[in-house]
Length: 321
Image (cartoon, rainbow, N blue to C red):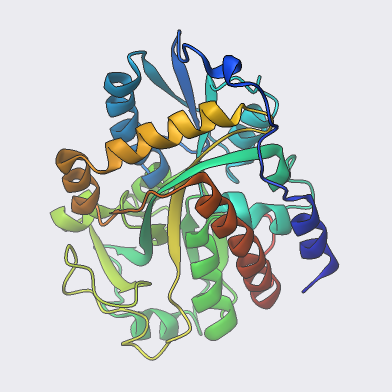
């Protein structure tokens, strides 16, 4: 384990400051702002909007989704880290939260700046190409990369789709390929549709409509087994890469110091939303698996993710673009 990862773990004391239950009395009395660290159209934005709609009903106050995109997802995370710890500004972000503290020379936050609320959903990543791209299989794509200069899009530096791309293209296939980061999965998927660039490594939500319409073609998916939504797409495991079982998760965080009673109220509300049949149906249709659980379970999971992705960053040599 690198000294950088050890430092991160030492700082990652996720427990919220113990404050009086009086701080949570009557909460919420005004809108709750959900800061999404990526652009509209990707898994984080999708989950935030589906869950946010239900939070409005459950909490009795508007849950307002605001996108603060950047190519790393760090901007929105930094905004929430500096917000008042009163439960009225919370973060919706992806597994990039756990990656960027190792990948970015200065991410502008540490895991310990937050009180984890809940892991909402998870989904695999997928390698896609524009429908006019000549490679029909992953093997053909990797073969092309040996003689041609290729580029691939991702939702942003430090996202797990970025690392899945680095894993297969650079670490496994040893290709000199250009990574093109976007400010979210939606813009990245649209870029691949326009063949600018014609290859993408994305979590499944954003490219799904284009895959269904035939404007994009999926070559491999990073789940352990095939997706029910994309039954014809082989897994990396099937294709001979058992080490590539990688997922993008979506979670909610509050700023450090948010009263634990408010964190728990938000946790209860989001868990309740995730159990609603219509919410589960919408998420599962996008290959997003609802998760839920306690704040402590999510805190433990994030700590493990910081270690896991720190190792992947080191092994792949991934860098901030």
